[in-house]
Image (cartoon, rainbow, N blue to C red):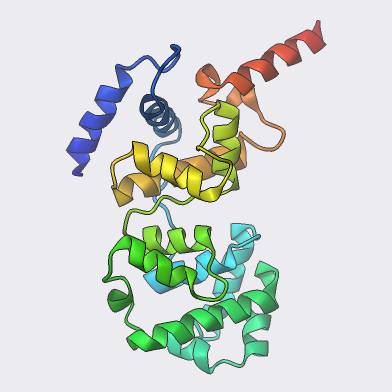
Amino acid sequence: MTWDGWLYYLAMARHKDATTPGRSKYARIIRVYDLLLETFGPQHWWPGDSPFEMITGAILTQSAAWTNVEKAIGNLKRASALSPAALRDLPLEELAQLIYPSGYYNAKAAKIKAFVQHLAVYEDDLGRLFATDVPSLRRELLGIHGVGEETADSIILYAAGKPSFVIDAYTRRIFRRLGIAGEADTYGAYRSMFQGHLPADPSLYNEYHALLVKLGKEICQPKPRCGLCPLHGICPAGKENTVAAARMVH
C-alpha cells in the first residue's frame, strides 16, 4: 500500500465511531494507531545500521532493556565482531563476554552462534535467506535454536522488510486494558488479530509496533499513568482507574 493509500485508509477509519457498542475490531485497532501517531509522531524504528545488526539486536533484546543491548552491540563493533563470519570464528566464551551487558549472555551467545551457523548455508547472504515468502521464512527462522516467535517476527519485519506483526508484552498489556483481545491469550492469536484487521504493509506494522512500545514504556506501565494516555477516551481500564482514583481522593 502506498503512503497516500494508507492515509486514505486511516481517513475512512476516523469516520467510524470507536466508542459505540458493536464497533468492529477493525475500527478500534485503526483508532488506536491513529491516536498514537497523532500524539507521538513517527518513531523511525528499528535502531540499527544494517539488517544483520537488527537481527543481532533482536536476539540480544530478549529479556533485556534496549540500552543494555546497545552496549553489547557497541562491544561487538569495537571488537570488529559484528559480522556473520567474525561471529562464527569468535570463541563462544569471548562472544559471551562481549555481549555481557545484555544479560543471559551465555544463552544468547549460543543463540547468535546458531543463527550465524545457519546463515553460512546461504554464504552469509541475507538476501537469499529473505527471498522466500513470509510463512516459509518464519518457519525456517523458528527452526533455529533460540529464535522464538517475537524474535522471528522482528527479524522478518525489521531486517527483511516483510509484513509480520510483532507481538510483545507491551502490546498484550495495552490491548487487554483496551478490551481488544485475540481469540485466545496467546502470541499467535494476537498476531492473527492484527494481521487479520490491517493491510499487510511492513511500514504500517513497523510504525504501529514502535508506537505501542513507546506507549508501554512511558505510560501504559504495570502501574498505568492513565491521565497521560492518548487512549484514555477509548480505554475501559483507564476510565475505571480514573474513577477509582477520584473516589480515593474524595
